[in-house]
Length: 60
Image (cartoon, rainbow, N blue to C red; front, side, top):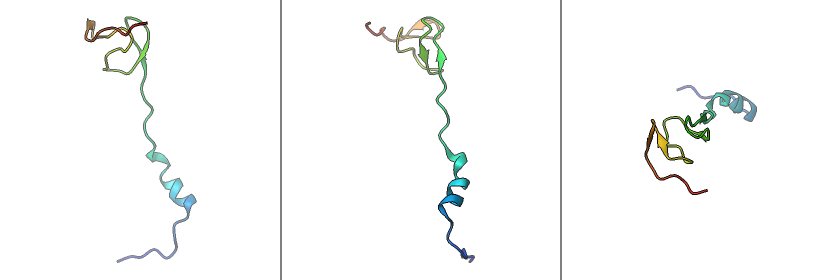
């Protein structure tokens, strides 16, 4: 079995792992009230999804 000859430095280890970051959260505008929301989620402001009221609207 192969054994590393030298210890991997923090710099090498971090350079190797730079692509392992979490993806950015996608945000889009609600077509009804223009509030920011996540795609394929019910709008927190107006409660609409796919043109229909799914949950009660949040009180202002």
